[in-house]
Length: 338
Image 1 (tube, rainbow, N blue to C red):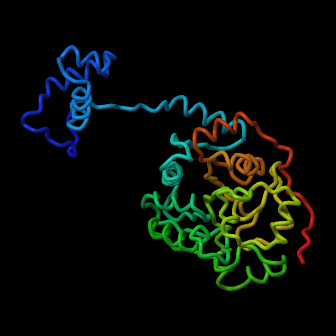
Image 2: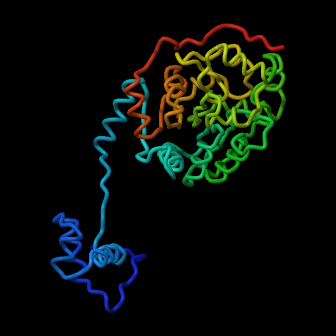
Image 3: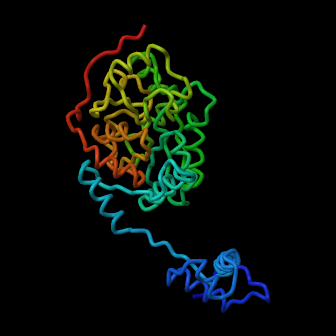
């Protein structure tokens, strides 16, 4: 097997034959370091050093073959259980170092398979979306449209404009920004904002979306939720969300545990509407972790995403907890805001 160009040359006095023999005994014949040390008259620490050097200089190589067939079966089970068109899985747990980055890379790879010249991509905001954008490969040209407005916060998680600009630069398309608050006080205020010339230009692109990619927010105090951490929603909105037993959101559309979208709040979202989301052919949700299990289940039950990108642990948990499809219709009702 040819050595990689980055493999360093061993020193002149390095015994490659001994390194190969020790490596074969240890990794292929399952001999212990103590046994090998006794056989060759070496210390156990010397054997450990030889094994380290054997890997460093390319004498011994460890190849990890991911169980792709089993991963594929698991993805297929989640896809069937939740009525999705596709499921992609990251093998690294979301809670481990680099887990979120790998999840973003899997999502970016999925998008790169589908991005075509002239298509329009919708993008949410948040730390997960930042990882997706960071791993995007050049393609297109494809326009990128901001799906949700912002909040009065300095937290980078709320900077959807920045992510859209970065993604459009990679994909060689035009950015369509949404210079508007994510939530307004009334349906009338939303109507006025959407009619503004600058915002209307972006809103019009929602009709042309070929794909959207968003995160799934968790609605729980002291969690990783950007909305909680940012402290950007009023006390009255917090109270109403508790009243409706909201567990999460996607693109600022709040959902209860049964997958019911809270219709009264939906009418106050300045960004993409539920109808516009469901009219988009490819709707990707990227999320993982134990704290997001309930919001993911709720989002999938709502029918808003039709593609899920998550990690192995979350996928197994989704199958273990099952699915509640009783809440597919949007809930009617009003919210009282003082």
